[in-house]
Amino acid sequence: MDFWVKALGALFLLVNYYAAAAQSAPPRDDRQFWNETQFIKPLVKDTDLVVMAVLRIGREWERPVDERVGAGVAFKVNRFLTITPTYLYVDQQPFAGLRISEHRAVLNVTGRFKIGELTITDRNLIEGRLRHASPDFVVYRNRLQLDHPARLGAFKFNPFLADEVWYSTQPLPTGRPGWFRNRISAGIIKQLSERFNAEFFYLYQHDGVFRPGNVNAVGTLFRIIL
Image (tube, rainbow, N blue to C red):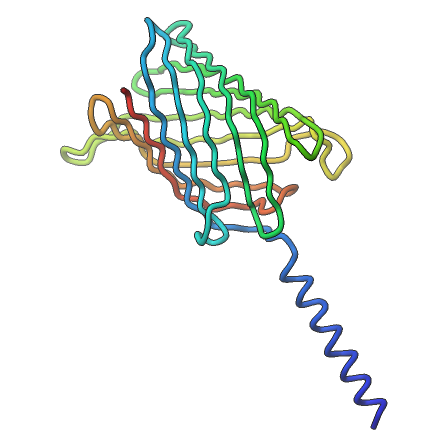
């Protein structure tokens, strides 16, 4: 009888141990809401000050997981090319027990041209990420977007499709730097007024390295010209 009591007790402890371990494991997937708001102030000809704020609600839409504030200066080199050096402060809480705070020095080089009414935008970001508790590293991101004017009755908008790939100099689980993330998104761009532009989108992120790596997000991007 004592043997069976001890065996059942050991089995109970083992089940609870693995259940607790499963609960504490970082999630692979998450559903999130993203919002970014940009305030744009023209300074001199072909030069704008851009102030931005970002809030992302995650952990299955239950709490903030990413907050960012920053500013940059957009230099319109010509009608095809814009260069925007930017500073961002980022505070992230992707899952319980992990908090990441970092400063980012970002160089944004964006090319844009048209083929008929189709607009092709190629955004290149070089991000220097400075963290307090771990080594600094650099991330390169390339985002290609296609958009085209459309209308439904009197409603005019630009549907778009975009794909972004990420490369990091930070050693990955393979032990070497490499490509680690892909984001594909689709949505619409709407000019709501002369000084107010909005985007509404769905985004899917696949990342086999960091957690949560696979993210389904709906989001908004607002641009307000002051």
